[in-house]
Image 1: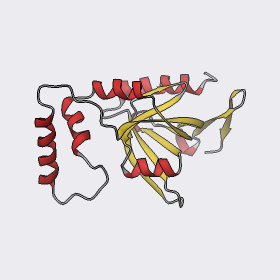
Image 2 (image 1 turned 60 degrees about the horizontal axis):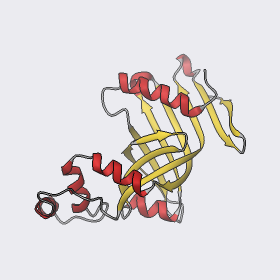
Image 3 (image 1 turned 135 degrees about the vertical axis):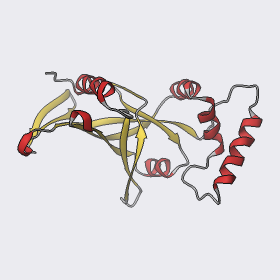
Image 4 (image 1 turned 90 degrees about the horizontal axis):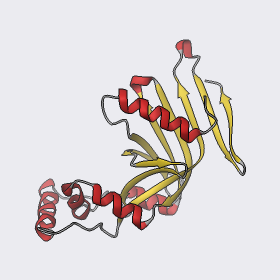
Length: 192
């Protein structure tokens, strides 16, 4: 048992990476626009530490616009093979330029080119148009490193609360709730 939610998350995440058949890093990201209208989509966790949980995207996407207007988010992990889930709620901050550049450089070249070719979340007239734009970027950067687009970077969810849910028989589930305070983290239980 640990009283550090980041250490507990790391333990659960390691177990998920060993047992989940597909994408243990997949997480639901919930955002809301300035009027409070929510939206949710799946993204991939690309880093986590005591500062928070990191994902990358196009800042001009729908999620980027929503996070600019309302810099709060919620994350949900569901690891079916372990019968566990983790919920995280907190404020958003942008990752540093150095972090974004380092992660972008680690991506597959075609993923880098796609970041240049896509007007993420905007209407697309045809798949052929997107493929044509992708090919234009392939030719544009032929023989050179692909730099990170200025509109593409990462966000960190800085958690205020982290909940760990474990399935139990007869709906006697266990819910551990960690809440951030000025002095660190406090832990409590929730009824299932």
